[in-house]
Image (cartoon, rainbow, N blue to C red; front, side, top):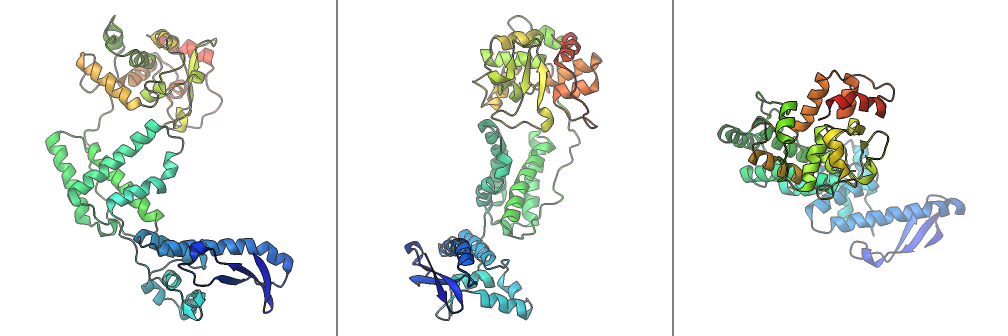
Length: 423
């Protein structure tokens, strides 16, 4: 790299790397540094050269033949020249001064405008036709902040509903470019779900989830790729007239049926222990399955577990908490002081295994009950025992309807309050 005087100012003079020969006919380039100070020039030239390389990379991408790459390259190249990418029709409507500024900014060689650069600055590149399935592929990168802190199991469970929603939509409407999705397409997709709700006994929530996941993918791609499409997504959700919370297991059912001798013997050791830990902690299945040895404090004065974001993402900030151990939960965890490796990365498999066993062995109190009902049952027992609301919410990992003041109950106090609730 050389700094030479050219005219009244100093310029950068350098050979063009062979990589860019296809889009840059010059063997050497002169780039003005807009200064006659050697010190200032030496400070500016690394930045100027980096900008040159970025512009060449954008041109390479724009020459690659892929519509998406060409559009993205045009947008970046226009930005490097100090402009926002606009369609040619919009550029033509600009005030004369602004239009001339864009024309003058186009890099020229021997008086001839470069086609790729002219297309970028003057809006000659057509927006890519991104299909619905391609939108999902782009979504994984564009929405990557949603994956931060998630374990492999959590990532899988996050991805699968999105994949299902897109697959269902494509089966009904086809793999259309997202800028060609019409209101009728979305109503057809809604009709598909309405028919399933009516004929298969599915809940309104099932259809709403697909609509939400599909809409999330389309809106994210539209926004992040700056496509400016008016997506017809509003007013499609179903009214959930029969939405019901998961019922709790009663204390009597847990004591007489689930904890009856031999009742859970058909489960594998880890699944059985997790069920028992849930009985007196109210923890979510994934929270127990994700425990590691550092979070299990069996030798403390008050045995307890710490629910923390270790290798996984917690459901919310309130989910980070300490829960004391007592009764069958303490005894079950003593056999697994290092946690549950079989289900640490597969809590969905845990729920499927346990629910199938409980259902097959007549251990569900009603058809609406499931493994998660143990969590609701624990909260009910705390309520009936008169446990303070602040403590109940802290133990369950729920939000408080006011600001949380102070550190909350000590381990000793928690043990004293929750011991009578334990089975």
